[in-house]
Image (tube, rainbow, N blue to C red):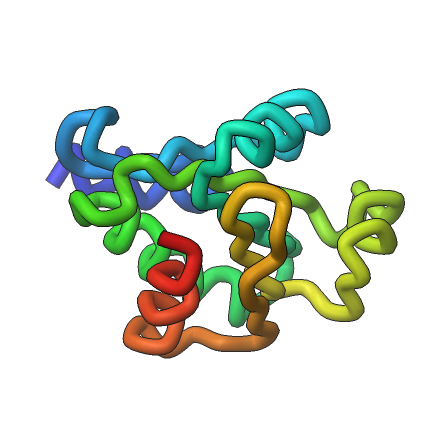
Length: 131
């Protein structure tokens, strides 16, 4: 029970919690230009997650992304979070019009994006496109 409360609290605070070893989970961090460029230069699979704390779709996406993050096929994927409300410069730069936008890259190339999707299957398909 304590672990469940801890996990739910961490998710509510926007802290990423993955079950399993960190080497088997998506590496997630707040957007950092240098880290993003390094991941692009290395040809990595990248997820950019544009979210808002008040967004109900974003709240439904979080546990889906956390669960997918534990899957071995996504262990080398890097994920960056952009706050829709406080990082407007990045929202514009990535040409995002709504929160709950997920963008996947393979290296420097944007592969696909979705907005408002909270279906586990289609989110998994989106992430898989960048592998």
